[in-house]
View 1: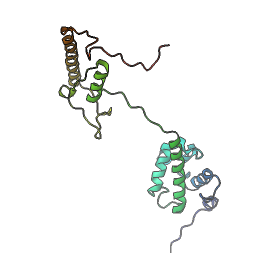
View 2: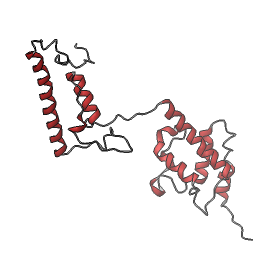
View 3: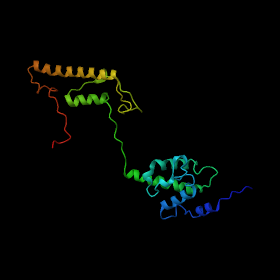
View 4: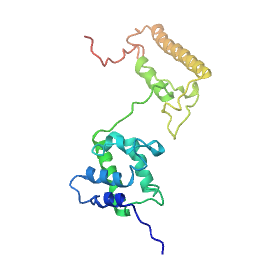
Length: 214
């Protein structure tokens, strides 16, 4: 029967690792596990895979989310520690990654980050709503503007709402038709001896002001 013997210094380090679930300070237990099994290949001098544990503060794992998410995936998949290298038992590894995940998720829930959407052109529904709000003139633009492309079944995402010269010309033609229709509507009110301001749809709305003047 073939037996594998660990070097005495490594045995001393591994033997000093407290059970992760029993330590009062989880970060200390996590650091002990890392020092016993990981830093031999992932320190500042070796930096295998371009990763070093020495730059990771385990008391604040949320500050190293990108690196630790990679660690969690590799440990969960059984890729780390590598096959043939000393490794803790499955329960210890599960406690290690679960502790990291819990801390990262808890801080993320307390400080959610919502990336603002990038600027994009109006789709047909937004264009119609803008015309109605600004000119008090509701126009079905589905017949004068092409259908909007979709991304993931949504037609209001910036990555899909690109602009081309042909599409720009379409919006210009749509603006001309809408403005002519709006003017004709008001002119018909004048011919009927009805004031422009009294004619429904002829009093141009002022855009709402969301910022007060100083």
